[in-house]
Image (tube, rainbow, N blue to C red; front, side, top):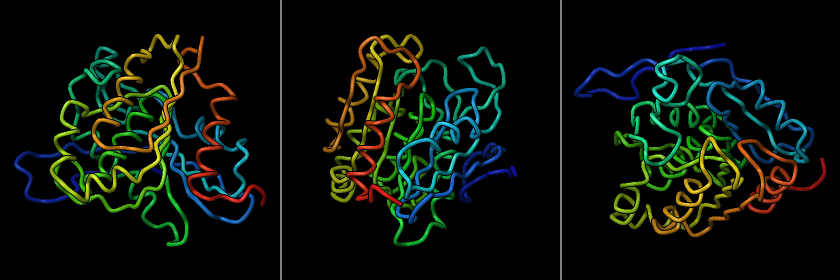
Length: 256
């Protein structure tokens, strides 16, 4: 099932683009439903591959929601259309920010989580551009709003970013420092960032700098893991780290 996400509010000075999100794949928990995690794929991928990655993880009490990004022209690919959570000129925090695309994807993710039961803890994770979108969602949660000013509606309890970067990094610290509530939320949110130091797609330095920027902005529960000799892909010990973080921070039982 796919549907269009257009504008998130009225009164905009300019017409908003309409984004058609692709199919969402859901992996049901094998045990008691304690947490729901939205897992986001990388550039050009889809929710099916995400579901295949997460369904084998040793987290029986987690429901996984794996959406598919809209297909759109992407500047870093010379305008070639593919699935992407937002437009990007280069895969780093130095690229100009597509605030409209970022907000549309963050709102789509929040919408997927908004109908979860009240006693179920929710989080967001992803790989590459999916990681960047998850990290951006973390900043929206901290500030309590999207970049367009519309309130952010979900209480995120954990964020995971593998081989990603931080969109909007240049203004993050100033935006969080002006609000006591933003500082409080940033300080309470556990974030796990993992990066291979042989990554030639999203360079390791961008992942490391993103972690440093988050810490300087007031995110106190940042864990940054370097994987020696690893490129732009995931490895089992990295996914083990994801399981450990989610289990400990979300208080998950180890058995169904």
